[in-house]
Image 1 (tube, rainbow, N blue to C red):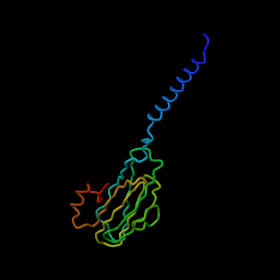
Image 2: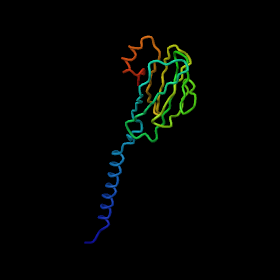
Image 3: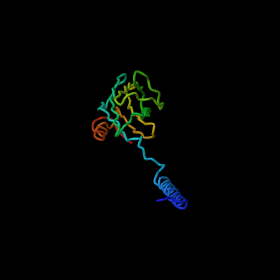
Image 4: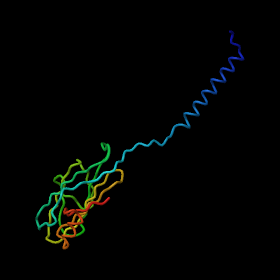
Length: 162
């Protein structure tokens, strides 16, 4: 069979239309909004802490940060604020300034609160990730209504909020 110039034109048009249809299909089938999850929920677990602390005493607060997914690119920071009482907080041997952010270097970490008075001590510790998620932990020592605090907090002297 001999291919004529008319057949070549028809075949060329069919191939051209096929290429155009394929490219239109590919463009409309693609979604530029890829759903890649990089932020995962997390929470901080705290080992039990005492409800009472005396002046000069240091309380160890053992913490475990638990995330629900891959977090190798996630950075976590910690900050604290003492709103009742007088004391200091240390992490990795450094005294933490109130409300300044400090990078957490491990998912297992310890904080040390040292009481500088015998009054009630109330403070919060906030753990945040670089995606804007946070968990606030509230600590209460030497409160007048200790039994109520112990019952509300499972006998731990700490409250967790998200």
